[in-house]
Image 1: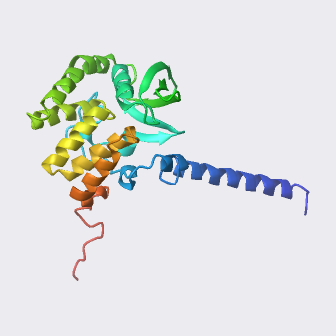
Image 2 (image 1 turned 120 degrees about the vertical axis):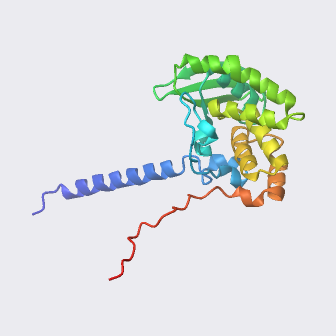
Image 3 (image 1 turned 60 degrees about the vertical axis):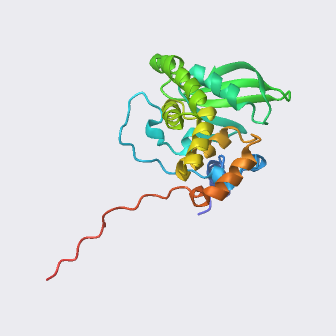
Length: 259
């Protein structure tokens, strides 16, 4: 028997369905290539790919990115027209922001302040050389861990300065030092650029692509973008496709037993 409530219920159902579909679409297009903002950055397609999480053999405690195994999407991506970067130390966040500059490609003139959220995020605000306002969202690894703060300032930062100085004369040591830095501060653009360059020179395409991918996500308007894309397409074209999921070494099917 009709009650007069059916149209309203149906309307509510349709509204709920529409909201759910819209929410799913928003989640799916969080920062992927379909997003108009990401398209405006004019990044090569391979920069927007991401590899799977690699197997870690030495899971070191108090390390954000052991063996640099995290997917690129966990280290640097975009949301709400802003960069979202993983970091551990406030001093590193400051260095990363100054090094990366503004999202519009201009120099960061000043840092206006920061705000910590309930979601373990530290949002930094800056003013650009262009006059625009800028923002970087840092996903903080183990917020409040003072030993990680000291580690960056007392060990990682001096090691990074050494790596920069010796990258031409002792590239192997420079790579070791830079790799240790990105294990703790995965979104350090200087270390990513150094590793990308040295890996490319040594012919290690997988490492070159990964590090340049993260570097260009952090600095999408760097003047080096076209040169990096051309070099990788020339020397590492096969490596521009992200690593696929590992094949299982065994069959899930039961063995056939003879009668």
